[in-house]
Structures are given as C-alpha cells and as structure tokens.
Image 1 (cartoon, rainbow, N blue to C red):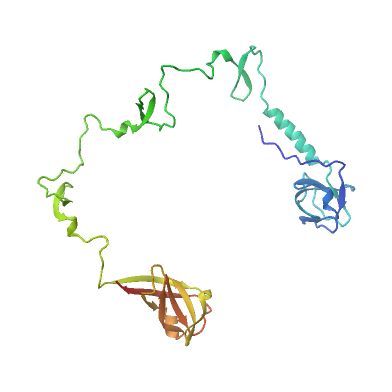
Image 2: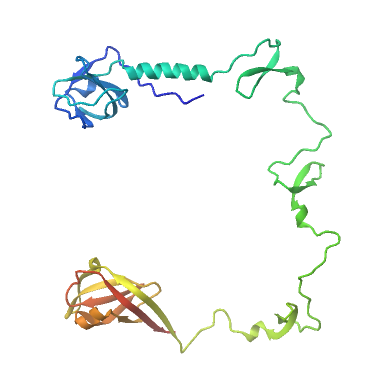
Length: 323
C-alpha cells in the first residue's frame, strides 16, 4: 500500500485572528494578533478567507504570535497581505485532496477476498497480496506443543557450513569445524620446513636457502634484552615544516629582549631535551626571533622581539636528549 498523505487536524468552528503586520509575497514569518486561537504546528492555515483570492499556507512552527509558514499550498498563489487580513484554520482544498487520495490508497491497498472458499480452510496470499484459499485446515498441521520423541534437537546459533557433533544425550551440537578444517586422507606436507637433525638444545632456529630449519648456533642469551639501556647514546627527535599560527603568540617574560613566545606541540619532547630551531630564510635573517628555544612536556617554545602578525613555517626543530 502506498504511503498515506498527511492529514492535518481540524479545528472546531474555525476561529480566526488577523495579521498584525504586512506580509510580502516572499515572507515566511507571519505575525498575528492572537496566535493562541490557532492550532498547533504543523497545520494548514488560510489567509484572506473573507476575500476572493485566499492563500493556503503550511504552518511549520508557532511561537506565540509569530508563525513560520511555507507559502502557496495546494495551487494557491503567494501574494502580499496587509495588517488586518484574516487568517484561520479552515477546511481547504488540500484537506479534501488528502482525504480523497488516502481513501483511494487504502482501497487500492486492501486484499481481495477469495471467491468460492471452502469453509474452515485457512487463508493464504497470492503474488499480488490478495487472499486465496490455502486448501488446508488447522487440523492439517501439528499442534504447537507436539513433540518429536526419538529425534535429535537441532543446534541453536549454529555457524553455516560447520560439521555437526553429538552431545551426551544424542542431540546435535556445532562442532566448530568445517570440512575444510581437516586434511584429506591422501594429504602431503609440501611447503613445511624439515626439522633439524642433531640440534643443540636451547639454540634458536635458523633457515637455510630452501626454507628448512637449521641450528643457528645462538641462544636467546646471546642477544640484548628488550629492556637493555643505551648509556652514552643520545635520543634525537626531528620535526619538519612546523607551522606556527599568528594566534599562537602571547606575552612572555622569560627573555626581556624577546617579550613574545609561541608554544609548539612536539610529541615525545621533554624538559630534558635540548631544542634547536631552524627558521625560514626570511625569519632567520630578519632579527625578530630569538636564537634560543626552551623545551617542555611535549612542547618547544620559541621567542620573538615583536609579535608576528602572520603565520610562519619553521624549517625544522631538532630535540636532543642524552640517554
């Protein structure tokens, strides 16, 4: 059945109010003298019902005496209206059209009763959704409480394609295995690595040129632990093409000659890193930016003598920390 058209609620005695101000032909907000006499939105309203060229509108919202509308409904024409023109909920052509169309759709969507049905037979449906005689009575089917003694219970929630297994009561269960999970009775092991002959216990395995296992001659103790330290080495974090927005700059008292600072996010940086900032050629030669920078938790702070008014791009930030 087709979806039914919207039919808006009627209003007894069709109380009306009037416009409190002018409405242009393109306006969508209608101001009225008393919005309380009108129905709640959404609903159809008619402006100028006391004249010869009324306009039907769809009220989508009502806020006190201010109405939001969609103009020129059901073939009427949007036109300019003046303060004092009446507006109310009347029976409109839109109401008549929706009523007639919905009756038609309901009629078209109903099922036709069967011709020459046998009394007591159950109803069925044909391809068009109309009723037919199924040729079956209720007694032709098993009762809903019938049993199947001697039959195995089927599996609940089984995975399609899995093989069946049996529980201790002889009922079916899902084995969790498909036929493809098992090897054929004539299967081979091509592609498997040959195990090592004469291997030393505890040694790690290696591979030869054919992909077979060999004795590497090494034990796990011959390698560094996952938590080993790197004393004497340095950790270096490098950030390239770092953008600094003009809004990132704020007053800062760290260096008197450079009273503005911008904090740049640098993941992994700590206060123990030593930062080196490479400015673009224009910023590096302009003399406005400090030759030093300070690191913090996930940040590097740069300094300027005067507050930049445009974004800049740092060529790189290199942060070094001894480990």
